[in-house]
Image (cartoon, rainbow, N blue to C red; front, side, top):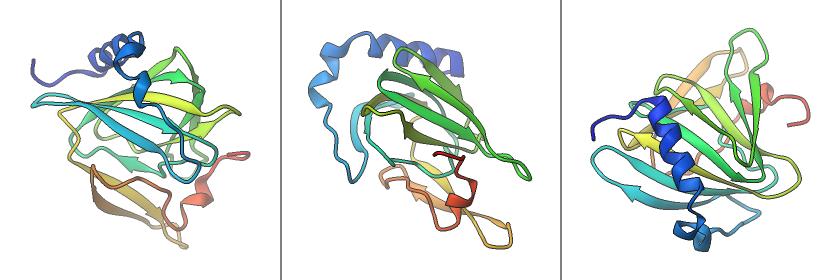
Amino acid sequence: MGELSGPELVAVVQRLAAAPERWAHLVRHDPQQRVYEELRRDADLAIWLICWMDDHDTGFHDHDLSSGAVAVVGGAVAEDRLLLGAPPVTREFAAGEAFHFSAADIHRVRHTGAAPAVTIHAYSPPLWRMGSYEILPGGELRRHALSYAEELRPLEGDEVLRPFGG
C-alpha cells in the first residue's frame, strides 16, 4: 500500500465511518477524558476511534512524520490551525464531514456542540510520535515530544489561544 496522501486518508475514514458495524460497539463517553480505541495498525496505516465530550481538547500539536484525516460520525468537533500574531483559524465539522492535515500542520481538535462526538482518525505512516505545543508567557512557542500513546491535552498557556466561546 505505501504511504497514503491526505485525500486517500479521507477516503479511508469515510469508508470506515459508513460501516458502523465495525466500530459502534466500541463507542463510550467519559466526561473526564477522550476515549480511544485503536482499530488498525500495520506498516502503512493506523486507525483510531475517538469519543469526545464537553471541554475535551487536544491542545496544539503536530503529528511528527504522519499525515492524517478525521471523519466525524457523530456530534461535532472544531479544528483550530495555529497562526502566529493572529487568532487561530477555526473550522467546524459535523457528522458526515471529514478533513485532512499534513505531518507539518500545527492544529488542535476540540469538542464543540451540545452532543457527545465520535470521530475516526487515520494516520499514514502510522503515528508513533507527536509534538505538543506550549505558549510561554512572553509568546515563545515550545514543542514537547510525546508518544502516540500519551493523551493530548492543552499545555499551560495554551488557553491563551482558545477561540472565544471555545
